[in-house]
Length: 425
Image (cartoon, rainbow, N blue to C red; front, side):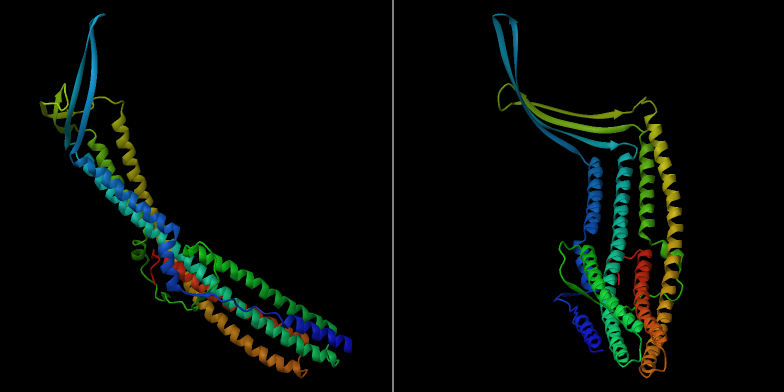
C-alpha cells in the first residue's frame, strides 16, 4: 500500500508541476489591429494601386481632348553626283513645332473618358469589397486568438479539476473505498487535461500567426488579444435587406462596370462618324545652322473609313453584348446580396440565442459538479455517476466558449455581408 501511495503522489507531483505561463507579450486591442491592417495589409495596398491605375488610365484617355504639340530638330547631309568626276554635298538643317487638335470625332473620346471615370468608380468599389473581406479575416483572426487565450484558461481549469479529482480518488483508493479502475480513469483524465494544455499552446501560436498575417506584419512576435465576447452589432430587429443590398460593394462595382460599358457602346457607335482634326506647324529650314528660312502651315483633316471588313459593326455588337451581360450580372448580384444578408442575419440570431442556451447549461453543470463532488466525497454517489457529471462540466465549458466565438464570427460575417469596410465599428 505504501508503494502504491508513493507512486500516486509522484504522478500528482510530476503532472502538477506543469506550467503554461505566458511569456511577456504585446497587448493588442481590436482598434489597434484595425489601424495596423489598414496601413499595412498587402491586399488593401494592391487595391489602392488599382484605383491609381484607373485614374492614370482616365488621364491618358482624356489627353486626346487637348492639343498635341511636338517639337523637332533635324540635320542631314545629301550627296549628289552628275558624273564620276563631279559630285556635290548639300547640308540641310531645320527645327520647328507642329500641333494637332481634335475638333470632332462623334463624341468617341468624350465617351471613352466617361467610361474611364466609371472604371475609377468600379475600382473604388473593388477596394471596398477587398476592405470588407480583409476586415472579416482580421476579425476572425482576432476572435481565434481571443478563443485560444480563453481556451488556455479553461484548459488550466480542467487540469485543476482533474488533479483535484485524482487527489480525492487517491485518498479513497488508499483507504479502500474506491477500486483501481476509478484511480486509473482519474489518471487518464489528468493526462488528457495535460495534453489539452499542450495542444492549446500550439493552437495559440497558430492564432497569433494568423493575426500577424491579417495585420500585414512581416514577423511573428508574442502577443495577446484584449477584448471580450460581446456581440455589439446584434441587429435584433430584422432590417430592410433590399436597402442594405443596394450598398453592397460587389453590386456597386458591377453597376459601375455596366455604366462604363454603356459609354463604351456609345463610343463604338461614334466610330461611324467622320473625324475632324485641325493641324498647324511652324519651322525654319536652311543649309546652315542656324537655319533662317521660315515655313508655316495651317489646315484641317477629315477622315472617314469607307470599308474595314465589318470591324466597326463587330465592335458595336461586342459592346452591346457586354452591356447586356453586365445588366444580368447586376440582377444576379443583387439577388445574391439579399440572400446572403438574410442568411448571415439568421445565423447571427441563432448564434446569439445559442450563447444564452449554452450559458444556462454551463451554470447548471457547475452547480451539479459542486453537489456531486460533495456527494462523492461522502460516498453518496458512485464514481461512475460522479465522473459523468464532471465530464459534462468539462464539455459545457468548452461548448460555451465555442458558441461565444461562433457568435462573434457570425457578427463579423453579417458586417461583411453589409459591405462595411475595415474601419467599421
